[in-house]
Image 1 (tube, rainbow, N blue to C red):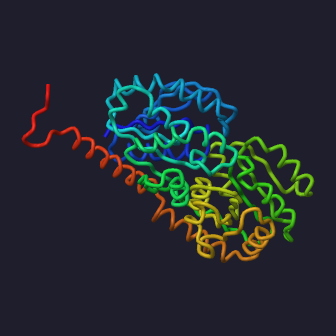
Image 2 (cartoon, one colour):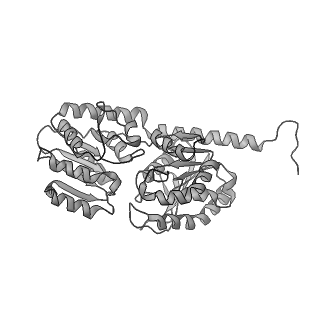
Image 3 (cartoon, rainbow, N blue to C red):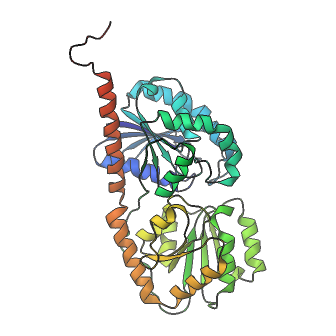
Length: 392
């Protein structure tokens, strides 16, 4: 098959969806398909290049920052990518299309052109689903008819967790929605739980936005009875300054390290130095940061929200706590801090889960099956029934 992936986010821009989309594209290439990718241009990168067999086409658009596009930035990508989408469709005759995010990227499915004659998938990621992010409620109310049309006209809508699927069904109750999670690459060396003495390091990786619960995590650190525990925060975003101020006011500024945005190599080194991974989010669909921590063999503490409970089984590969509950987070951190054997059990369980359920090959095979089914249906519709002639 020849496929076109479209995502307004692409590493280093964006969050988990950016990395998930290129990882899936790479894996589909490795199993024999041809994949092109239409996305946003990043500073210093060429407009077209081949990455691990994936032909990447970029258009320049406005963005607020690495982790934040904003409504204007998202719409600027749609406006500037529309012409490129039509040109690529005419030149390459793709078998099918894959739009990451119903909004804004899925708007391109409505653009006139050759691509309208081919099936497409829409991959829901979280913020593009009404009800997921309260800050976007006004936009989803305004765009709901358009959103429903994009979903309805797709061969299939895919959510990255059962929780996100159920949320999407609130807006489109009769729509068939598949669930295909994100994946991760298993790390060869288990870096976690190698220390039993003082100086344990807690790691979190996320955009610095209110939804990620980082204020709760910093508050919990300040309440811990283990002053030798420290916190590494990887990521950037609009509330960084307020989080830094919170760390100072809580008296833990010397134990909280803000690393900002890190490239994959530096982030891997940070995971190798960590002992416990924490995700304190208020809402999550299927966290790539959580999966990558699992792949690195880190024990987990996470909030029991959204798709996170589909990745973390309390007491098996991590501990679950309520969101916004600093005291529960303190108790979980103290439990793991004083029990290296439990950290090792959680770490081993996480590596096994990634190997058995969340490999990128498994994820790509699931998408491959959907694409193949979409082509079978498209071909059946275009083939005349026996005994009937096609009108000229």
